[in-house]
Image 1 (tube, rainbow, N blue to C red):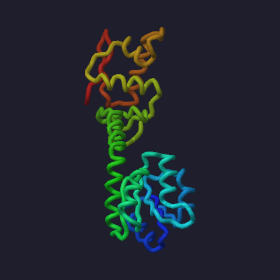
Image 2: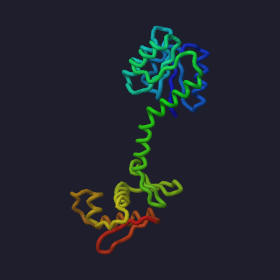
Image 3: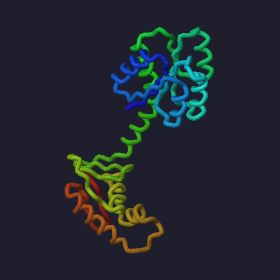
Image 4: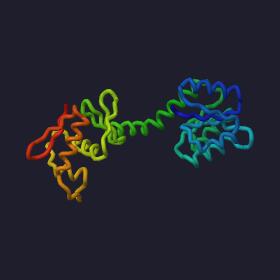
Amino acid sequence: MYRIYLVEDEEHLRGVLEAYLLKEGWHVRSFPDGASARDAIEERPDLWVLDIMLPGGIDGYQLIREIKADRPLLPVVFISARDADIDRVVGLEMGSDDYVAKPFLPRELVVRIRKLLERIYRHYEDAQDRSERRSKLYMPPYIINELARTVEDEKGISIELTSKEFDLLVYMARHTGQVLEREQMLSAVWGSDYYGSDRVVDDLVRRLRRRLPEMKLETVYGYGYRMVRG
């Protein structure tokens, strides 16, 4: 849920805009003046809507300076009833991402905010989604999440594994269909400087078979093991 902070001194307009923004499912916090809004800058919402003309000596220009100093890429929308051309140019020079001149339809502001949020945050969210997808290995009926270091079955039930069990599981899943020597598996999980017996691999595979009974872990006699997709 996006957090939108609205700074508008006209009480009626502030209430109307807040209602429209809330309808979008966003978290909204509103401020009647620049001083109260300034105290919230460190909270770093996802977007600010600033009226330029504000009471109390701190106007929208001062606020955007401090907002951008704290977080340069945080999107800001200016609204103003003053000379639109001058305010638009000054606002852009100071780093505003959009400008709406009064009077305007509340729905117009909502549409502009939505498009701005999509443009600013889409690439970040897409990157997160891609990273999450790459971190998941699907070995039916199990789902392995490398980032979270978790294993779940198709019903969402979590299966507890030790650190070494999980590391070996991921290594074998990353090499599905390949026959892996014990020495390979030993080096991947314990490191190349491990000098103990390679039979610890056999013990680990036995434990994985016990914890993940539907995982297909084949023994290749005289060589090692192979994971096959179910």
